[in-house]
Length: 280
Image (tube, rainbow, N blue to C red):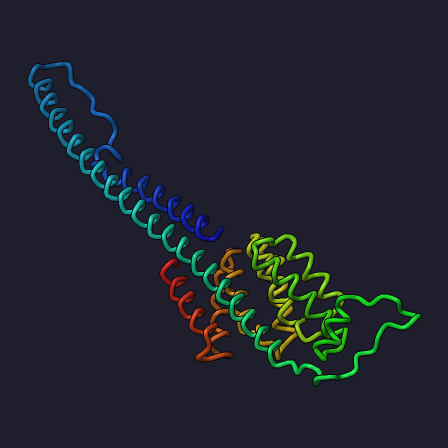
């Protein structure tokens, strides 16, 4: 994860800084001058050397105390920064979950509105009975006849809602399979752009970031009129961040604001950009 990578890089830089500090915090005589030679020819020289050694020992003790104080201060600062980064990472994860739940709810509400706007057949309308060549009728065909929608259109909706329900219930691996099956059956259907986006969300939730990135890119490139295009661009920025590609993350998030100003996706993109700037 990019946050862990940043934390490790910061820790490495801090350790290197401590090593430099520990070296330069020593007195110059400890870094550059050779060890003193004791003159054993006279008592005066011995007394002078003893006094010099005492002063040097005192300087060493003082330097050591200063160095320890600096190290403690640096360690406390590193711990504080790591704590802030972990908190930001946790907040981002919560934001991702809230955003996904919000989009799921909005998508479900829109589909309910669409279902409510379908015109039912008039009272007493004739519905043909099964013939001898077709002794049975599938549930989707019966439901399509009752709703006034073509059988293929009704089956497309059923297939989409099945995959969407798996995603909403947290069965991400099953949702991936269901959305892929849907895309093969209805590559240009009315829900194709949405299905491609939710396929990316299902992969993103399982931390398959490269797969998710490909899914979101497909929405942007292949479904320019999709209502999920802005969200796909936003999640591309999130995914690039998870992959540690911060420059591409910032570029993708900036494009959301340029292409879809004043949108919810643009607002979320600006917040994530600000968070990335603080991390860097």
